[in-house]
Amino acid sequence: MQSYDIGEGLQPDIVEREIAAGSRRLAFARPIETLFERNGREARARVMTITTLVGVLVYDLFLVLDQILLPDVFAMMVVARIGIFTPFALGMLWIARRHPTRFRMEGASVVCGLLSLLLPTLVMAQSDSVFKLNYQYTNVLIMMFVAFVQQNRFRYALIALVSSITIHFSVIFWWRMFDVANSMAIVMFYSTCLIHLSIAAYIIEYHERRSFLFGLHATLLREQITRAARTDALTGLFNRRYLAEYFDALAPSPPARTVLAILLDIDHFKAFNDSRGHIEGDDCLRRVSAGVAAVAARRGGVTFRFGGEEILILVQGMELADGMRLAEAVRAAIEATAIPHPALGTGRVVTASLGVAGGLVPGIALSDLVAAADTALYAAKRSGRNRALPGPVPVAAEQDGPPSHRSEPGDTVAPAAILC
Figure 1 (cartoon, rainbow, N blue to C red):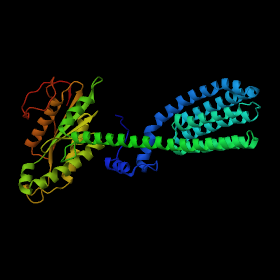
Figure 2 (cartoon, one colour; figure 1 turned 120 degrees about the horizontal axis):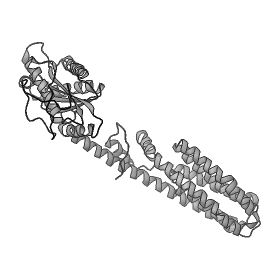
Figure 3 (cartoon, rainbow, N blue to C red; figure 1 turned 180 degrees about the vertical axis):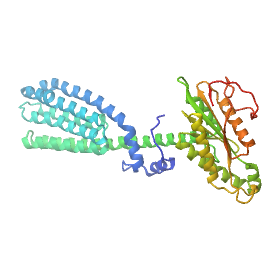
Figure 4 (cartoon, rainbow, N blue to C red; figure 1 turned 60 degrees about the horizontal axis):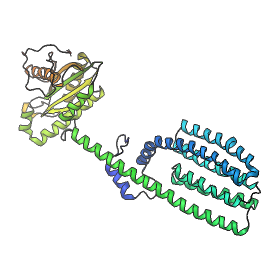
């Protein structure tokens, strides 16, 4: 199934309303209409390029028919088709391709279509051939080409069709090329073609828009499901499942890059839950998570709920000294949130302790990086809480995974592609 570049902010319910509306006006609400045009622009330019080149070739090959049906004006037809129309159409294509907006592409298609009909019709008017009546019906092929083969939007197709018939009738009646009976037959034939081709052009665009809406809706639902699978429902942060995916995608191949991990834990959170209740505890987690994510995002960090009241920040390309400054900014932001912590006494607020560690990827496993930050976090707790400390050099592991235990401050660890 086709996917669409949807950007940000578009929700499935907006598309559902458009689907329910029916699209009979051949126009969407502005954000969806913009998306419709943007996603179809490249394909539209490709279709226009191919059909124009093929169309010009076929148009010039009609000189064979000109020689057979209108031999007395064949030289004029050569000038009209090869000398005038062909360079004009290729020039219009070049202009439209340089700036492929909907207006320029559709406008170029309509103008070229009208010129391709006008030139042979004017030359035909100069001919004394008895086959003029048969020849003039070939203009229907041009109308079909502009309306369908080049896939113009309905309003442009309708402009092209009405203008084509107006040109055709004007030339025929101005030069009085046919008797009344044949003229009336031509009017009936082309009028019927106008009605049928217009209806067909409308139906084609209608179904194109409906197909786009259903495809867009499916894309949005897939993205919504993906976000839900990656996001912690309580805090809105990324979850542990996405943490492994994200880390694996950081640096799949050399050159190695620095990755910094900041692991934080809310101080005395169990006491907070016991004194304020789990509803207040959940609200505390949400507020802390929002503040942490906002501070981290300003420095290019990605924030995950690591477990319980633990939050992990990963930042690419940051050295340990800068990581300590970021950790301090996070700590200060949590304290500045000023969430009361009555279990600690009057005037006390919620704080957090943080551990910081850095490493090179590829080279360091996620479990080793987190274990080093976890050791520093434990040391911060032991040192009085509400502070950030750097971690030791962790052991490199071949297999990535969550840390199996908290490292104690005295644990021995060996160096392995770590920056501390």
